[in-house]
Image 1 (cartoon, one colour):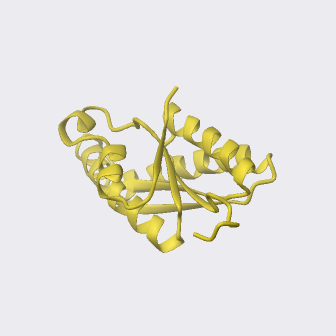
Image 2: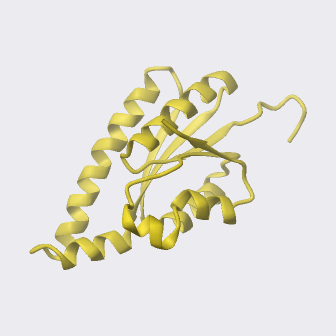
Length: 150
């Protein structure tokens, strides 16, 4: 990084609609205003969650996935509106896969220089059994990660 470069120019913010991801959006917005950064809000449709919900509902895999995608687009739009009120360049993207892997892939392909995310998300019992997405991102990324709390 050159000396005259801003500290962070591209901040990736993975969101899942939880109160912690909303805090991550608010924190990254403040940081972006200070650094002149661009933000990318990313939501990952967790393929494991889609499969679990499909097993316990009367819906097909595609119906469950479509419902989850609609919900994700709504909160992505809401969160991007909150950011754009502050004249910050913000984009949104929706991916499908294993959350920490998709986050790391997107960070690399977009050229992020910071990841800001909530310390916990909506994974519930799965988080206890498999570890949080934040833990996995921290373990496998080469980028700095900032965790937002309530």
